[in-house]
Amino acid sequence: MDIRAVVVGGSLGGLSTALALRCMDCDVDVFERSTGPMKSRGAGLVVQTELIDFLKEHGVVAEEAISNYSSI
Image 1 (cartoon, one colour):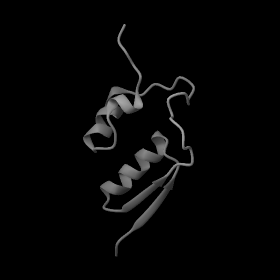
Image 2 (cartoon, rainbow, N blue to C red):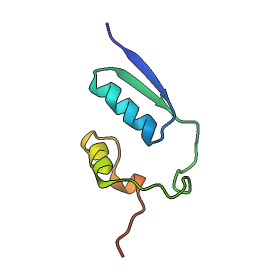
Image 3 (cartoon, rainbow, N blue to C red):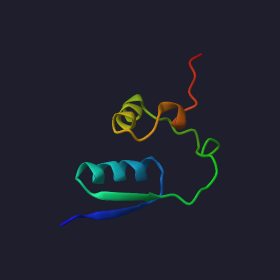
Image 4 (cartoon, helix red, strand yellow):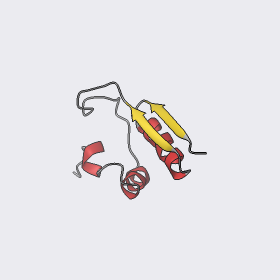
C-alpha cells in the first residue's frame, strides 16, 4: 500500500518531518501558507552546519536559501 502524507508548515520542523517520511518511501506534500520571502522571519534561530549538510544531501535547498550567514 502506498502511503501519502501531508505536512502543514514549511518550517525546519515541517521539512525535517517531510524528509523523514520521504526516507520511509512515503509520498509527501508540504504546505506553507506564507507567500512572501522568509528572510525577515524568525527570532535569531541558529541553523547548525549539520542541518544544512543534511538538507543539501537530500536535495531540499541550497545553503544560500536558508542562511544569510557571512563570516566576519
